[in-house]
Length: 106
Image (cartoon, rainbow, N blue to C red; front, side, top):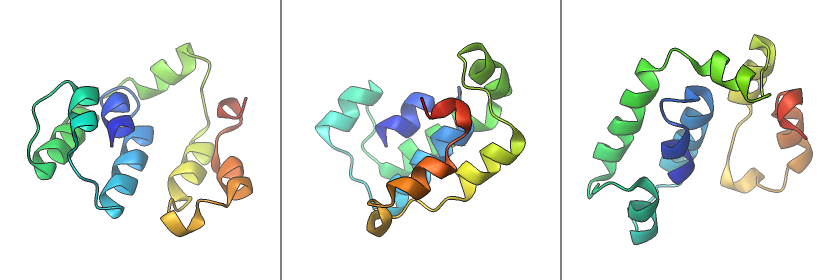
């Protein structure tokens, strides 16, 4: 969940991927998560909505990814979004690697 928060409003595609995985794993608000978000979220839904709100207003993801050397095509981003992150598939490193845009692999 902390990664979803860190990317929120900057790279919504990445943030939303981490967010969905955290929700699927039924994340908990922990002391560590509170420290990482630097916020006082006591309710999981409040944190989820905060992240979704930041992601909804971002209109500069492509510019940010390009300027940091992590540009990707629409097809590459779609492949990343479509790859299922599931706890039972954590060992599928090859599939995960193939789902990443080329510029993210190094």
